[in-house]
Length: 300
Image 1 (cartoon, rainbow, N blue to C red):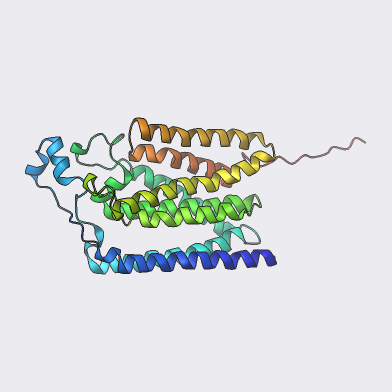
Image 2 (cartoon, rainbow, N blue to C red):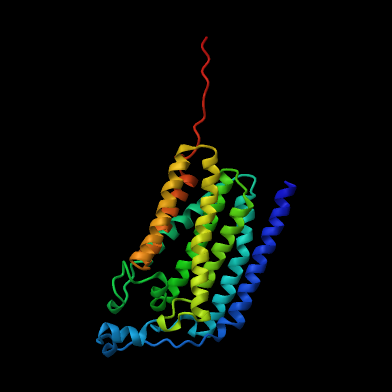
């Protein structure tokens, strides 16, 4: 119990630092972001594909934070939410028992996250940017749908974070590395959704590198938090977990292969997310992975 209180203080300080740094960054760096966004006309949409991309790649539609009131409401709201991540650790991971309210909360945001990222990944986009399944990324969609992009990021971060915690608590696993890595990964997504893909001309700029770095941190750290737990269960020689681990790792490898051979797209980005959601649902809210209790029979 004492160790739990000590670790809770560490996690609270960690998330406090994350929230403060994020709030300062949004207040004094992103508030000055003046990259031009241009709405294409019908004549622009009639341009040949190469000319259209050269003129508008990364500059589609006005971002949500063009309105200063909305921008500052977003800054305050998202910063407060990051502070709440420490509360989630306390109420899920260190709760004496997983109550009904906690279960409902976790399964609800897991389902909401799965449904929203699926819907979001198939939103329409100018045909000049190519095939929605192979060319248009979640971030590119964010240029046209800035509000939906932020909801996508918040739901993805929140649903993965709370349900990984639920998975840990249900199995009495308190691995510090997994908790910290998952925390950093889910926090990084808040950076990603504030600096969406900004076009080919901005490659190797601070904005583009910030977007790529935070997106990769979420992808790898979010997956790592689950893989660490799965490897822990594999050490116990649980066949179901061994099979689940193999499948999850194969999907992660497949995504990397597709990114290199086909290219990045919202569909390809969603593949490991869909598998993660399915796996978390099965572990957390079904009895599929639960160990069967052995009942002894006494012959009289």
